Length: 355
Image 1 (cartoon, one colour):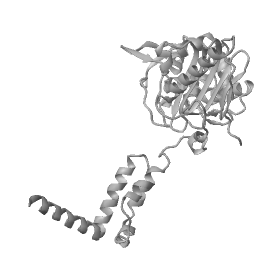
Image 2 (cartoon, one colour; image 1 turned 30 degrees about the horizontal axis):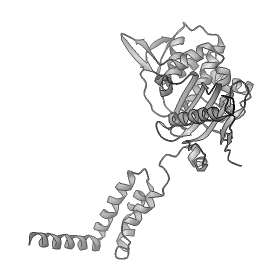
Image 3 (cartoon, one colour; image 1 turned 120 degrees about the vertical axis):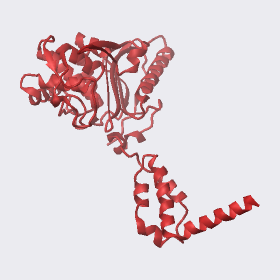
């Protein structure tokens, strides 16, 4: 009898909610909360409109219609690559990066090409140009540089382990900018360039033009701004030149380093898990991430008997750029093993999107 009474009570409550205007809004609002967890805002905004549900409550379809709309909604914060539709390009390696380029460093032969014409935000890959300009400026690496309020991130509001007032040498700032992608270190380096930050950004763009990087433009030295943009072709040219500088090779591929911050000894680590794994022969690398750019990675590495330059942009997922690099290594290794009488992989894959 208790079960029957409970069922009757539940039926009465359900009918009351269906007939009451406020009950209909509450039910819809609950659905809006669940769709919010999927990263969509459109369903929850629609659910918040008060009078629509009350007028049509008797004719309204079940809440499952709202849930179905949430499935096809776009991400709340899509990358530029997602907005441009670059991820719709399929490839045999099932790469999660919407842009990919693998090039022989010595011959410039392109082994893999996917959406390489796309110009996208490059996040902290920017710091590779920052480091190149600093080294070529010939300023003393022993000079002391102090972090100030000017080095705080006003673009994205990110934090830093380098507190305002921290003083390190130019060499240490450069090391942390390349290895650990420290934004305040990169900005401080630009501020201490002759002529200040404005002159430094101008020097970055001038260097890009001198290297033939016609798709590239910089507005600041950290990569926090989505207006720092480039293409895979341009970044391959940058990696090739940067790899010629021993200090950049050393600093970008250090697994970890301990730096004295005041009285504390603080350990910093490389942002590239492939460097830390020790299973790759990497000569130079840089990672990058902001929401607009997705996960990015550029590297010089020896694979399948070749010195290669790899560019991966706009990768979705925290570890997907690493997974893409491993897929490419496996593909190149297999191509080398199956090629007749040669360890040099000759297979090419061109997946550039027309237009």
